[in-house]
Image 1 (cartoon, rainbow, N blue to C red):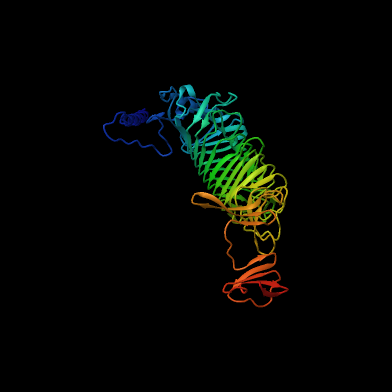
Image 2: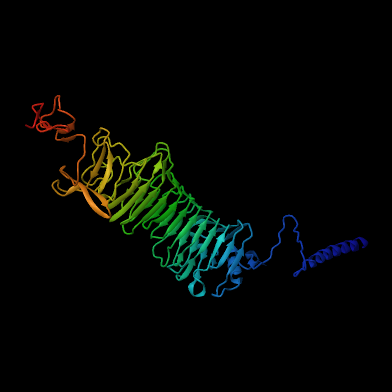
Length: 535
């Protein structure tokens, strides 16, 4: 009995000690205080500095709990909850879609949220226009979202045109995603109605069937999606643009996607120093014939890494009246890997291609396969080649040279073709068409030999253009000024000059001017191989 009494007293003292210690955690302290958690324990509060911890809110899974926490945030002047949700680090399986209003920030702390549904969206970013500032900022950072494939979507932005994932009139604008990981979904990120000016920094969109998807059928969407230093890789497709949306890539990489880094009928991409790499080309694959495609690559790399094999091109461009600009792009291929061209032009209409300072270990021809017209300008191809202009460039369709196009490659005595080959129109320079090391200047416009001049030379004289010379298509030269030359050769006969009477053999019909001669000893004519004066 005594022993039992002592035990009860010890328990009472221990409990009293805990309660006593808890009482010293002041809610409104007058000074500093310290709370120490025992090893392997944690202190959780549902609200700290107005940031909410979702796992202390009701819900069947972390998705429902985050939605409950969002509902508990204070409302903005526009009538929607705004604030920060902080997810504790850990692994959470869920099937309830998270719906994040525009002005909510979710801090992931490296947590992995694993979406177990094979359809629907793990995270929906959407706000009704009537209850929010359409440009209110929000975002998601340091969160890992994983899925199980199927038709599931990792992140859905804005209104769903079908009204299934979100209301069709909802917005997702000015959202920022920082160091997030999105992987294992049918589609990693999909853009809906009223989604624009969204930014992604760091992190990865990886191992999805489609990395980032811009479908047709959306409204008020597509303005300036920016991706900074992030990776979109190891999926079926990196970026899929069925309809045009402005994609800006800054650094980062789009690597090892099965079909293409970028594909679709509505390609509209500008990339600065981005690394594109996959086993086979084309790495960028434009499709369709109805929409204008825009591709601008400034620096960066196109690398088809597989050893061996042959591919038609690094880039294929479709659409109509499309435009491509390549500036200081490096081309590379694996050992023994052949790439037939830089650009395979399949676009209709009148397009435009500009390329400068193309570098790399591989140097295929610039363009093949055009089915429409393409204007080519601003050429400085360096190691890239125009050497196959004798017929390999255009099986069908036309290329127009918009300005001088230079080739640094030996054409080995090969003249350009005259039908369906490069270039159709304009002028360009070639090298060694006569197989004697010469440099050649071509006007490829098809016109009768007796028609107007093939080449004209103009000079700006005090603000006015003056034609100083012209060359007709049958070789007639017109000079609007003096001729100064040591020797003038006309169909084998020469006209030369010197001080004194000429001597030695000469070509019959040639003329000689004695610069110090007098009457009867100034002009000499070669007759039967000998010089005679003009008397």
